[in-house]
Image (tube, rainbow, N blue to C red; front, side, top):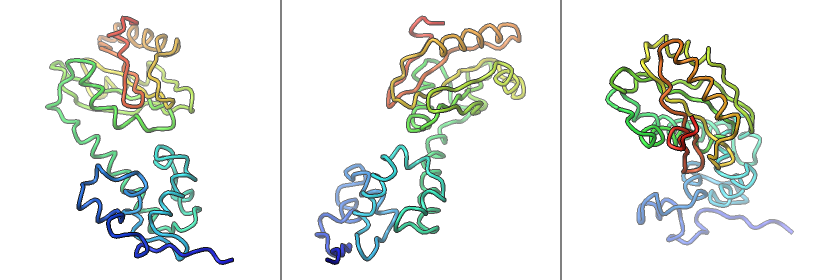
Length: 229
């Protein structure tokens, strides 16, 4: 028996994602509806919304979708290179918007300041990324750099990599951060150990390590606030 064909015109007007977005705003749309707007069209067998739901399921959710390569996207039914490029461009634009707050007028005074800058950049990543914010003597951000990308469960960073980057940009102090892909920001013994090593190395070269922030899914832990360093 032939499968039914789902086209956008078969979906009631009030349920179409573009119309719903214009009526209620982007925040009211589901992940699948937002993805359907980017896809624009479906196939002969399914609407853009049905395709978007299937893609999210095959990818393992919106987090995993962010990590898919062009080759992995085009391997999915209904996604050609044009759609894959559009999706990757949209994801990259989101990352750049999240980073756009990073200017020299941005000061880091509290752990929350650092977490606010880094949470949206790191919370959805499927591998651990170790990032440093480099500050001048007034605690203004002068640079940001990702120094390590680890496996799903571990990220390894050496103090020489951190302080080579800090010296290169004439940093007076740094704030370290990394994400936990599990979503739980509870520090591991290894997190505490590497932070202590960085603080010791920093004292030798004259660059203060102000804090180590661990980013979870919308939450964070400051090792300094917790009294762990």
